[in-house]
Image (cartoon, rainbow, N blue to C red; front, side, top):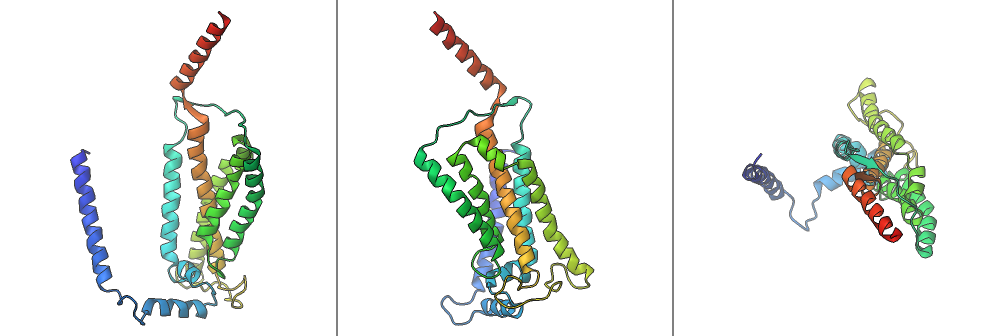
Length: 262
């Protein structure tokens, strides 16, 4: 496709999106008004389903189907990066040598890692009760593991981050979300309907019906997806090198050694 054709395609798609956004904004309630129909209904529905965090109720109950679409976008993006960044035939994996890490950086990174990891898991587990949830907690938990790279070296990170296991866990987490959705259909209700489990006691970990389960599935999917994504980019930056670059590096070393010998 030519550059001109790509430009016209972007302009056409952007014009359609801009028209839809303008049409939607024209029908919004007046700014600063006292009438908030969507917010009032969302809060009422969250309280009726005994979910303390209204945002979690919206994400995993009232519009859980939309959240499935967002999860699918992330899953597809990570899958695309894995395919594009895989080791090619003309590339070679060259494990890096241990790097020197400043003592203050090492102490801070290694002491912060468990705190950040527990914080991420806490945010996931309490997503239906307090601000946060699977998306936010998953990112925090995934990035916490990479403090091992800052505080130690790449080899230490690889020991606590077996990429293949995280790839499997990513797929299983996404599948768990879908299974919970189809379970509602098998129970005689609707896809992702919050009718499978008792709603529980308000403001407790077991409240909200299926909201905690869907939130946990999203949290694990996001955490594993971010780990896999960062792993592939780090592989390209640290381990994988092109064969011609490797050969040139060897030739340069041989030439230097010869000069030193002379």
